Length: 127
Image (cartoon, rainbow, N blue to C red; front, side, top):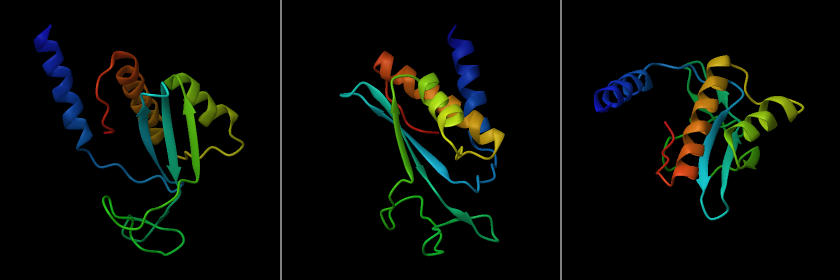
């Protein structure tokens, strides 16, 4: 069983290092809010410059991964399960803020990981 777990972790770590183009509709932050017993997602809009970097639509400046100006989410949702949040995002919103299938799959995976951390008491760090 440990060999299988190591193999799965190795595959996941390797795939996490691949290049992924940014979704022009923006990016998501996924969080676990333990005290409230919910998952929380925040969507941030962005534009993409000629170099493929996310830039603030208001300033045109490249969005820093850490530090930089505090940005406000364009959308915040909470739910108790990954499925509940996926239904809200992909079925109930008038305009879905995900425009690329690989980003939709990523968001679903991250929400499942967050749900497992919430229900199992483990730590969740977004990939």
